[in-house]
Structures are given as C-alpha cells and as structure tokens.
Length: 143
Image 1 (spheres, rainbow, N blue to C red):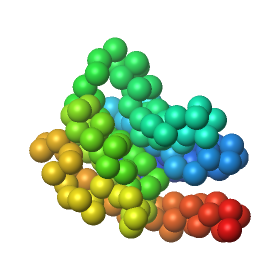
Image 2: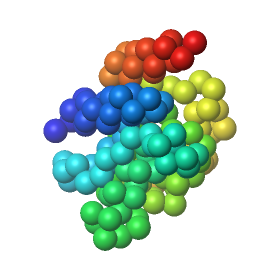
Image 3: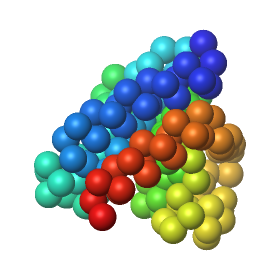
Image 4: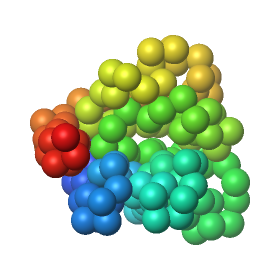
C-alpha cells in the first residue's frame, strides 16, 4: 500500500460529503497498512462545527484500536487540516499526516507546525489536483 492508495480512500469519503452537500473533505487513518478509521465532514448534518472529517476519523480509529492514542498511525486527509483538527491530531499523538491540497485560508500551517505533536511528520500534495478539483466544484455550485 502507498500514499496514493490511501488518499484515494480519503477521496471516497470526500465524495460522500459532497453528495450530502457538506464541504467535501474526507479522511482515513491507517495503521500497519490497514485502514482503521474513516470520516467525512458532517458539520451540516449534525449541526456541529466540530464534526470535521478528521475528527470523525480520529474517533473511528480510536474505537477500532480501543485506545485514545494513534501512535504508529497515519492520517490521510484531502485538504490540509484546520487549527482545530491539527490540535486534535496533537492530542492523538498521530505519527504522520498526509494531505492532498493546501487550505490557504484556514490551514494549520499558516500558524506553524508547532500545533502538531513534535514526533508528527507531514507530507502534502498527494493527489493534489483531484482533491483541489472536488473543492472547487463544490464551491462553484454554491456561488
């Protein structure tokens, strides 16, 4: 398995959000090449501003593992995490975060990588065009 494969899984989740008229962001969490958690934005459906794709995936993965820490796990998310999700990633102690397209307005990297756990590494730009295109198509339909 590789980053492209798992980002395609995150894109499947993002398309679910798109179909629900949610901002189309999807996330999956992987441990030992096994998908252990998935999620997509549900903020509108749940009337919960914290129901981001990453938060849904963190909860699913923690439930799968029966533990709150996600050490030795990788988060794949179609759009760069926001500050809230980066903070949650810190508390999970996730080992790695991989995202597709940057979020120039609300992405955590505008503030800096200090929001992440010191042992967390990042990779960006995996399937960037596909991830970006889905977001552009969603917001084009809103304007």
